[in-house]
Amino acid sequence: MRERPPATPGPRLAPGPEFDLIRGFLANGPAEGARADVRVAPGDDCAVVAAEGVALSTDMSVEGVHFRRDWLTPHEIGWRAAAAALSDLAAVAARPIGILVSLAVPTEDAGEFTQQLMAGCREAAESVGGLLLGGDTTRSPGPVVVDVTVVGEAPRPVLRSGARHGHEVWVTGELGGAAACVAALEAGKQPKPGARARFARPVPRIREALWLLGRGAPSAMIDLSDGLAGDAAHLSASSGVAILLVPELIPVHPAGRSRTREATLAAGLHGGEDYELCFTAPVGAVQPHVDAFVRAFGVPLCCVGRVGGGAGVWFVDAEGHRTPVQGGGWQHFRDGA
Image 1 (tube, one colour):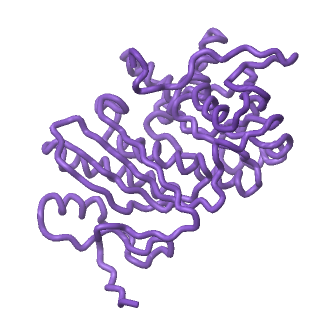
Image 2 (image 1 turned 60 degrees about the vertical axis):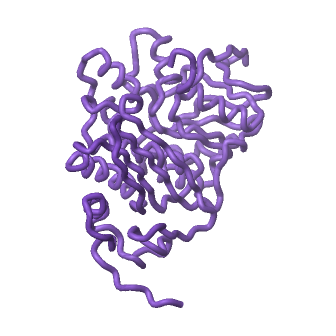
Image 3 (image 1 turned 180 degrees about the vertical axis):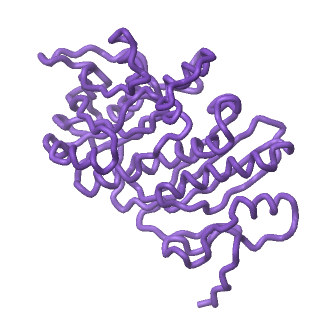
């Protein structure tokens, strides 16, 4: 085995403004050998990780599409971009190892704006036990683009395809808060603080997913990035089942509650960017753990329906009558989007 070089503060990079920027991103980062799952820390052409079942995903945030600078600070832009990608690890109950961030910015932003943005990315990763492993930077004429790749370990991944007839459907947290914030901002109003936090600083439910996995609960799971209606449809399609929702059980964030039942329900179904978890589990597998979950994480855990025969997403009443859920989740290339 070759002798490992001594650890140094930050990556070993040649002089130059681009590399100075990168050194700033990675200052006080992990030294080589600091973690068993990171074999080679940032500073080489590749980071090298060790894991049993490597989980990989990527998520891109584009200025003017996913964020606006008049709505978010640079730190919040970075946090949101990383949290959205990290939420994909939560969806399969993967333990985070780290993130890779590719960043395209105009020359005039290659200073404090970029440093704060990257600090947000890094802090989001560290909040769930991950590290900033590296990435890439380039000059852009605009807009700003933040592309985050997440790396995790999933020896027992929970997939979308495990839902079975008769299973229960559960949701973590409350839905519609982020959408309520966006609606307020678009109307030129000040969003409620709780709603703004849901939009600007979403929490990837990684610890919650691993906690549930440790109790053998989820049979299928997805993170709610595009709204409950649209993401539940993915569970339905992957598992070959119908998802039957009880409207009265869907937990809606206080900021998303309206004077009408229909508008409140729409906020819970179609809001998007909640980054909560929707999962299925055998009957009785979750209920004994609800109180402990709430104590551990401070968010609700709600049964919102069940899995039935057929396909698609439906409302179901006490007599078992089904009504199709109209409208799905956000799609970037839908007509008029």
